[in-house]
Image (spheres, one colour):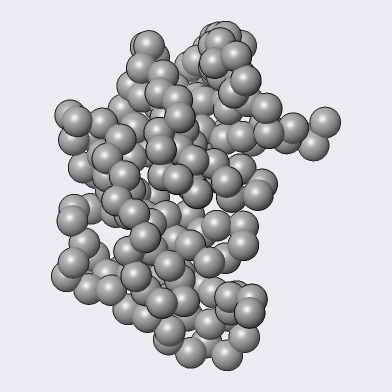
Length: 170
């Protein structure tokens, strides 16, 4: 069965999941949060909630059952998760944390790639429209990581600090 369409609310250290159709509370999480939540992302299929913390950890919850599916530790230095991005089919998750961009397979939960040679803390990571690369933004630098070859390329140095990043359809 399809998971219900949901709204996620974050307030005072708690997370609440509501049904979009009728506003009914499905689940509420209080007190078990490990540290401050920095990022919330729901999967495209709306069945998983990815919660990034200020302690280099991402918790993956099943939206319907409320069970923790996985705990991912991205950086041993306990830095904040700044960005989480899912591929269109939810098979990969890219995570930005401090000076690191990592890529995880969501079927096996293996870390398939990690890039740590970044000059400034990562603000944003997103998948390209064709899903063949990840683009990350940190301070004034935009970097492309080719997923097939794992080559990195600095695309642009801007004269302004970057907080958010988006692709045009083409």
